[in-house]
Amino acid sequence: DEILWAEGLEVIRKLVLSGHQAYLVGGCVRDKFMGRRLNDIDIATSAKPDEVVDLFARTVPTGVKHGTVTVLENGRSFEVTTFRQEFGYSDSRRPDEVAFVLDVREDLARRDFTMNAMAVGLDGEVVDPFGGREDMQAGVVRCVGEAFERFSEDALRMLRAIRFAAEFDFTLLPEVKQAIIKHRSKLRQVAIERVSVEWDKMMAGSGPEQACHYLLKSGLLTNLKEPLPAGFQTVAEQYRFNELPWEWDITFSGIGSLENDLLYLPLIADPDLRWAALFAGMGLSEKDSMEICGIFRISGRRTTRIAGVVGMSEQLTAFEEHSLEYKEQWIRLVLAYGRTIAEDWLELNESCKATRLEESSWLEEMPAASISELDVRGDELSRLLDKSPGPWIAELLERLLEEVALGCLPNDKGSLLATAKSTIGNRES
Ligand code: ATP
Ligand code: MG
Image (cartoon, rainbow, N blue to C red; front, side, top):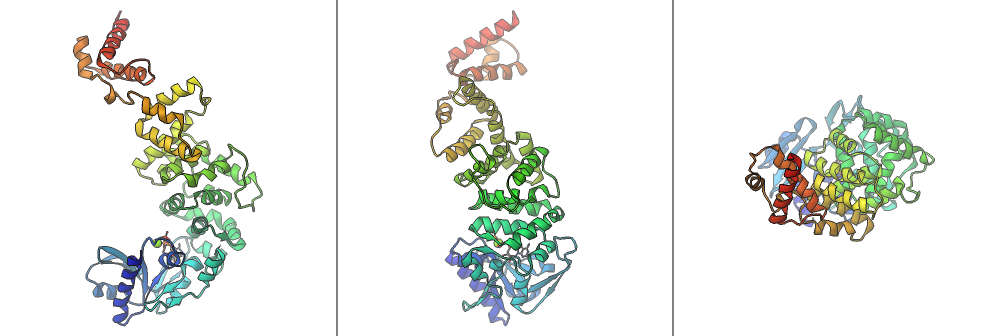
């Protein structure tokens, strides 16, 4: 971290020695002041993109039109952006025009929040024209300028306000909340990919429960460009009207309530399992979860995990815990979803309950959780029963697996073959 910061300063030094102004800016300055881990280093400079390209050996023209060049040094990348102003947000998401300027303060003025609008120079000089340090000290999220105006320019900032409030456990100023309520429908103009990046960061961050609470309370989630499934909308609306609309603190509404489920999110380490816990807490189906993941362009790999865990939870709700039927159903679900999803389900539920669950030993004691773990192979069945291979083999193996998994049949070749023989014999007679 110290190294990353120092390397950022080296990039600045090179720019300054060539007669330009240059500063570390944005998130890294904010995180440095708060003693947090730095993600990436952003640099703002008076140098024009082509001057930046000429100055460094390895660069990538990331967004030259908007002034951004990525500089590669010591195997790291630094985003170097020319001081700029932005004009005309006719569509509430992207500036119609940018203009390069010469003063870092003008560049800071286009940024979203006071804590994100600070710069640090080579000699450690801090440029903080909007009182970012003071606001961080007080723990408040304040817009640079008028919240109403800034959210109407770029509606994504409403989500970012919530992200930073939740992440740092800061307060959203009343004017920020009011501006969110006023402009929430403008979120419909923002590309779903940008929304997805922000919400995903919130889920992986340190205040996922607060973030989800704000997102639901504000009504932002029912104002997306692509509407989420009806199941989601219903629960979201209900959550929003449950309490007075200006009540933005999570209040404990009893076990089994969504508020209560949200409070468990930080106990779960894996962000994808947090997603699953949110969907399961909202009572969503596996299908709805898959649809939501699709809308948010979440990868197929992650979707399988998230929706699988939700599916297991969904199919267990009808069963009374600790009943015999529950155990049987749980084992069948392990067979249906596979060992890894079952382990994910366990991780989620054990994190929330902070204890080992008996399902954990059921999984350990399962002699086989998939056909490949059976002590017999398809070709052996085919030979023994003297039948040519066909779909019957997979069907029979599934049946044997179920009996083995439920503990009704030992997982050894002799027993498996004997059962196979009698099953097929019964069927054919
Ligand atoms: P993170 O730690 O998540 O990267 P960040 O503050 O660095 O947070 P980025 O999206 O990387 O967020 O943006 C870098 C900087 O650019 C911000 O600190 C802010 O100054 C500015 N910025 C980003 N998005 C916006 C926006 N929508 N409107 C105004 N300024 C923005
Ligand atoms: Mg950043």
